[in-house]
Image (cartoon, rainbow, N blue to C red; front, side, top):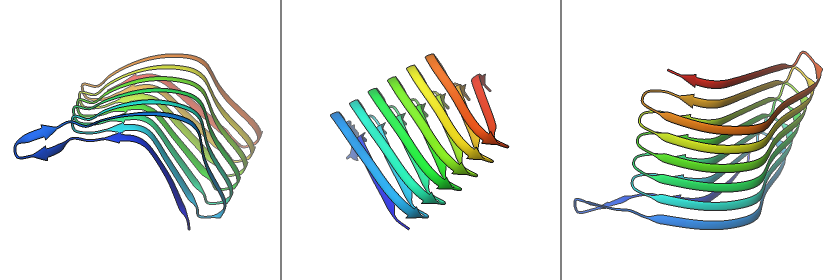
Length: 206
C-alpha cells in the first residue's frame, strides 16, 4: 500500500506565552500531479488549509490525481478553514481520474468550521472513473459551527462508465450557524453502463 500526499499552502496559529501568533502563506502553483497504479493505494491533495488565526492565499492551475487498479482512493480538498482562519483559493483545471475496480474519489471545495472563512473561485473540475463498483463524491460549499463559505464554481463534471457505479454531488450545505453562498454554473453528472446510481443535492440547512 502506498500513500501519496500533496499539501499546498497550510497556515496555523501557534501559541507563544498567552499570545496567538498568526501565520500566513501565499502560493502560486501550476501543474501538480499524483500518479499511481496497483492495489490499495491512496492519494491525498490539499490546496489551501488554515487553522487557528492563519491565513492562506492560493492560486493553482492544472492539478491532477491519476490512479489505475483495485481498491484505490483519491482525496482532494480545495479551501479548508477552521478556528478563526481564512482561506482564499483561485483554481482552474482540477482532475481526478481512476480506472479499475472498487475505487473511490472524494472532492471537497470550500469547507469552513468553527469561525473559519473560505472564499473559493473554482473553474473546470472533473471526476472521471471507468470500471466496476466505483464511487465518486463531491461537496461544494460546506459550513458548520459559525463557519462561512463563499464559492463561485463553473464547469463541474462527474463522469462514470461501467457497472454498479455511484455518483454523489452536494452543493451548498450548512449546519449549526454555518453560512454558505454558492454561485454555480455548468454542473453535470454523466453515467454510461448498467445499474449505476446518481444523486445531486442543492442547498441544505439544518
